Length: 408
Length: 223
Image (cartoon, rainbow over all chains, first blue to last red; front, side, top):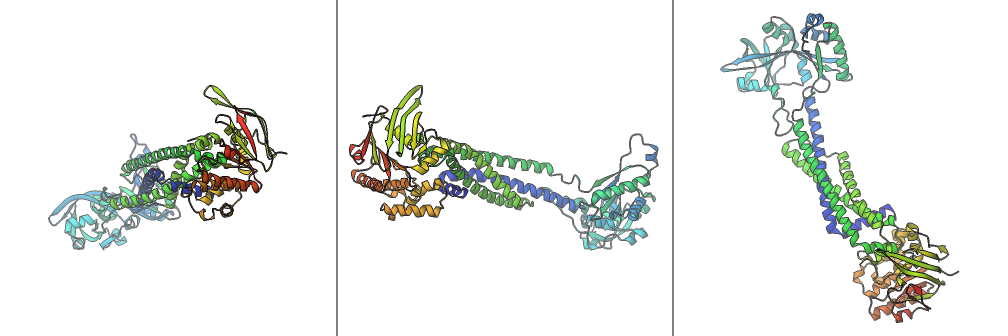
């Protein structure tokens, strides 16, 4: 009896015992469905995290910051001028692994325009900042090289600030805004940036809508008394090098200039998703439900198969009298459960697919049932069915023909 | 050499703590082409003898050669294969698979033998069923047939593998006299075609069909 034949017999048996088959199927369908859903949502979640990292600068981006000084600084540490605008210019000239270098001066300023007044962040930087952070003006333009050279008193507003100061982005263009008492001309307003991990989490990028950009040179000229120390330095590695290679070169160059390693370099996007813990819990619950359903399904299958073996003892006796070996009887019972498992796995996959779609739709999360996932689902269902079928199949195969035939 | 040669067969069952000696040294010899009836009251050991002759069970001691092959010490898989190739069973209760068609039932022994495609098995089953006058029943389920027809299907199933011996257990026990006569005629035809038949029965008129009787009593062959 070939394997195909055993499977055909199994299919016929599954159809002949429709009630039992349906009950066994239910457990497998629920279990497989839950597991598919969890894995699909989980996969979607890692995808969304990657998207977020790409949104805030991508994997080729690194950020350099001053390292906190130690308790008793050494002479070399004290001698270092820390991170400066000159460092940025030096890196831009010398570093072969970088495609963009954006210095960052960060301050908390008084914003005033018309009757509106509030405190908020201002970033002093260069045009490279827009390249690195994928920033596009909605109206007007971003900072230019000329602005930096001339130390112009111009500013580019985040969408929310333009909105609250002037009503609309269009209305803001060309207006004056006072930053800590010095007036700046609004030359551009940025697109509203939005990124959400899920429907319950807000706009992860709202902080970018609530700030103003000015030329870094203007910041030093107007606010620091020409002290050119930076709050941060954002760098973009060239595509073939990647963040790791760039990190090595930047470390070497900066250590040479500072005489000591008094800075930290971190890849952008590290530690990005605050909702990760929530998702872990969510996934865990679904996974537990899936595993429990599968185990329950397996127990139900084992029970039903055992009952059906007892019910069919005489049938097995007859088959043995006709020349069936124990192995053939074993294969027959197992084939039946395998047929059930394949059907259950497939239907469970369909259920999981539908469930994933529903959850993804209502929670606005990306999630996808991939071919790999489909394979995992059917494989799991098969494994459960197989394990559940082993004992009943073994019982049937071990029957003595004489006693089986005598069984009433 | 005889088709069935059994010497000094004994069979001891353990029933709880009691040893039941179902066979106490039985010698049986059946020639090729014979039609033999084994008779005796219930408990005489005739069913046990049939199980051993049919390779469903092994004797506790004694020798048994079936069709020239020593089968007394075979177990499990080897014994199953001997059953499949050399023995055709007909049971009192027919023992057809209720959810299979008549032709699938008849073809079943060939499925276990292997080497036959499904198409070849069913073709052979249909040929045989036509010979038994059941050609118009091949697609039916067993419960759509009369008792006599069912037992004739069972006879066809027993013969499809061209066994060395047909072992028959109370073939008319569940049939009315007309259906019983129908079935007995089927055996006569099978015998006329050259088959060797060993039949267990306690009905004298059924036993009278056979050409020789072996009477059992208390686990031994009575004189």
